[in-house]
Amino acid sequence: MNKPNIIWYCTDQQRWDTISALGNSQIRTPNLDKLIKRGVGFKNAYCQAPICTPSRGSMLTGKYPNSIPLHRNGNEFFPDGVPLVTKILEENDYDCGLVGKLHLSAAFKDEKRVDDGYRVFHWSHHPYPDFEENHSYDDWLRREKGIDPKELYEQSATFCGEGVPREFHQTRWCTEMAIRFIDEKRDRPWMLSLNPFDPHPPFDPPAEYLNKYNPEDLDEPLFQPSDIDHQELFRFIDQQTQVAVDPRGDASQATEQKPIDKSEASYTPPDAYNGREVKAAYYAMIELIDDEFGLLVEHLEKIGELENTIIIFHSDHGELLGDHGLIYKGARFYDGLVKVPLIISWMGKTVENVHSDALVELVDLAPTILDLAGIDIPYDMQGKSLKTLLTGNSDAQSHKPHVMCEYNDCLDLPDATHASMYYDGRYKLVVYANHDIGELYDHKYDKNEFKNLWISDEHQALKGQLLKKHFDAYLNTSTAGINRIAPY
Image 1: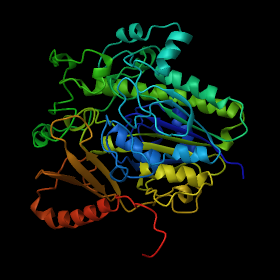
Image 2: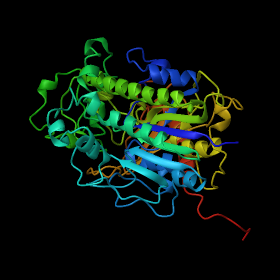
Image 3: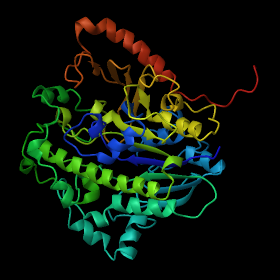
């Protein structure tokens, strides 16, 4: 059997509830909707960390962050001896390419590469022109578009508002580089990782997309006035939003301590904003992604490669987007941050138009890719392949009994928080190490996670049972270690 080509499209900081076909009637994603019709859309896919580097490390290795180990953004290096699935593919005759972000180690001025298996490496951590070298997107702007990147981004220096035109956008660059890679002459299968920076903050879509969304037509973020006091209990837990605010407010009320450039705005939120205005810009960014993704799929169809290509679309983690008075990310485990979109399609090989409620994790992607490509899965990969679910040989609504997510001093913030989440499809338990506070939500009655049952007297027995399950599940995320070859 000829091995399939693979497109692995991973956005940055995209929430699970941003796909029209999966229930959001306020956003337009026709191309992602079409992909679901050709495959499976997962409604309960969870990342292994609510932060970029540990999440991406997990999905690229098939191991939990605790097992790699890879906990932080800004690491000096990626651990030796932990093979990426892209390297395994390259060793099995795949021609591998990367376009966009990687973020397995610190991306300050540059990012150190590991033996990643990529022959083509068009690296662009984020689109802002503050890298000294090896920034392929900058090079494209200067050499092919005749544009000075600094001048381009100085014109759109805003936390939320109009960004650069589509023709010069990093997401557009991703599409162009992807098509060039796909069109190369070769006599072996290929695998392409696409990693645009959007819809990561700041929220700055091109004007033509921003104008498509009227904030007044959108729902408010998930918020109750009681969130302000409740989040005060978690003030010393690491979070890019230090103090919860009412997201129904006025952005003009923000203090003058605003980020001064695009790069800083990507991790430093304002202290006041209008949640529906932010959501409008965020949705516009995602619609741009959908359009560019659609061009890519159209090209595959045009050259006759669509039916021979596995397509995976997902994000590394979500975005709080004003829910509970919080924005951006950190040591939080609300669904808006830890649940992500996930769509997988291989025309003619996977089941079609399936909306799956199964609990799945991003750690499952690496073994799934190998399994679909007919490559042996290493003994120490911890994810569980989705192949039988995708091909209709197992129940599409069932995969795992629970999912795990962890935060271990991920960001350069004062508390150096360590926390982990256990979710079994109904109950979500969050434990914060060295803190008395915790969270327990019952999704059967409280899917939006407003009622914390952690200190509820009538739920203490349940909490004890879930703590035991949580402990067992967390122990199972530790590495298998060195392969056993003898009984003693």
